[in-house]
Amino acid sequence: MAKTSQTLMDMYRAMRQRFGHQAWWPGEGQLEICIGAILTQNTNWRNVEKAVANVKAAGLMSVSRLHSTPQIQLAQLIKPAGYYNIKAKRLHNFINRVCQSAGGDIAAFLGRSVQSLREELLSINGIGRETADSIILYAAGKPSFVVDTYTYRVLLRHLLIAPEDDYEAIKDFFESNLAQDVELWNDYHAQFVAVGKTYCRPAAKCEGCPLEGLPHDRFAGQQ
DNA sequence: GACCAGGCACATC
DNA sequence: GATGTGCATGGT
Image (cartoon, rainbow, N blue to C red; front, side, top):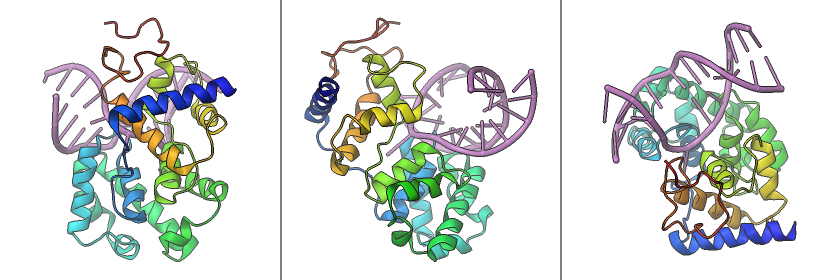
């Protein structure tokens, strides 16, 4: 176990040395981070930025304004992020819960314990595990490790997980092998995204990857 | 034109 | 429980 912890910290240091501190989440304020977390589901972040900019330009980046904005109007604003009809519904589901559960006070909604917050987020239709953990870590600033497709690819390529490991198993792998440090977990996940955008893709070469020196699966860098 | 991008819910077997 | 499918825009 100590060896695994060491390996994870070595990986982190190697990525951070290459990419620098990532200073996530790339958004302002708790509400905007929550909105971005929902909009980025299976979507390129650049498209999300356009959608978020539209919402802000319309003066709707507040719980009460979003709450009173018709879903069809919200859908038009977030169109660049794709899946706009279903995401407009998901945004409303989230906002409605913040209103019901915390009187529309986003800070109060995010202020409870990690376990309680995670359970409530997961009970909202449209918020799954990754979105919930992103909201907890980046909007609430509380320790909940985020697992995404990049995390899965990097760990799989470097033989740290098995293909059949599910989300909760991978999340637990990190949380039980890293110090419980919000700043570390925040930057660690961001580093995985940075490395995953260029390396650790199915047909990507490993040359130049900061994790090049680690053990690889036998398909790494092959066609 | 194909493929991918910081998922999730739901239907079907 | 595992697998398949719909949702959709914009960049490469």
